[in-house]
Amino acid sequence: MTRVAMIVLSQYPGDPRVRREAEALARRGIGVDVICYRNPDQMAVESYGQVTAHRIMTVRDKTSILRYLVFSLGFGLVAFLKLESLARRRRYDLVQIHNLPDQLVFAAVLQRLRGVPVVLDLHDLMVELFESKWHGVRARLLLPVVKLAEGLSCRFADQLITTSEGFRRRLLSRGIPAEKVTLVLNSADNHIFYRPADGIMERQARGGERLTEPQLVYHGTVAHRFGIHVLIEAVALLRNGGLRPVLRIHGKYDANYRLVLERLVAERGLVGSVLLGDYLSHEQIRELLYRMDIGVVPYLRDSFMDLALSTKSFEYIAVGLPVVASRVDSMMALFSDRSLQYSEPDDAVDLADQIRRLCEAPRERAVLSRHADQEYAGLAWHVMEERYVSLIRGMIRSA
Image (cartoon, rainbow, N blue to C red):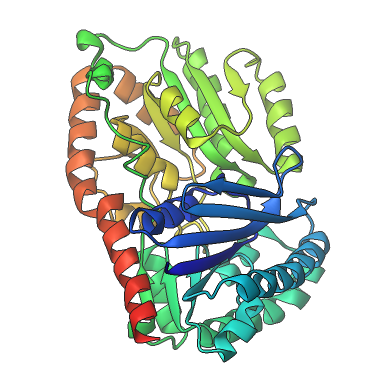
């Protein structure tokens, strides 16, 4: 059997991109070993059909630069040892590394020396994310190291995969040959996120009713750059304007940012109106989305967020939810004003106005969703899946 090893500083099956790609290979009869970290409630080794998760370390606090650096270096070393241990029992035809961090790719150094092709899947660009996430003296001192690590890692890998056209162009501007970079968008997994056959999403129009108690949703990473505080301020404005929205937030929280959100919810009198929920599985998120009215993607604007694409927006569109999203370059490059209701980044008043507009226009909600579905057709996961699998198979054949 053809076998692929994946290494990711994340969990499995909780990381949606790793799961999509691993299951895409498994559906083609390719066995996948995923080397990842371990949450306290997870088994060290667990099989999911043709995919096996090998969990090598318990996750640590990664909120500070130094803690992240220490944990990622330790994980990379243990991942290298685990990969070599597994490779003694089974030969790998390809090794795929998922960033962050980029330098995790060097865990495959002995495999590459043996002629095994190595692909680096750049979920995010480390340089831009570093600049967006961390500031201060330490960050400025480490930035040249981050740039060096990215350059060396990209040169070491045989092929690169990235997740947005903005990321691809930025890589090309840094001297990476175009033929070395493949774009595979973070599209929603159509095996999980889809419009149900029973037509439940027709409730978008609510029979022509104005939404007075709109059910709003945001899920995914919950950190400052994603603008959740702006969304909470918008909810407060909507309530002051006579609506009674309920906002449900689910995902992985930056611990310090969660405290900021909890304080903001209390100060604005939104306890019961804004629910800070925990992480949910993909299937649980799908069931939640079926009960929602509007998905909101309130990204802030900076050098990273202007390039990054929102996975959650794809998932909202896939199940039929109308979307209100920040007007950032990456989103506008894919979806027109006919498909998404755009608001200005970091502007709670405009965000509230755009949500209110959809609440008052049932036909517009349905039309927006329909146009988004049409524009999304060429970006959907079944298209990206074939592109991804073709790349992996081609690399294995040419090895």
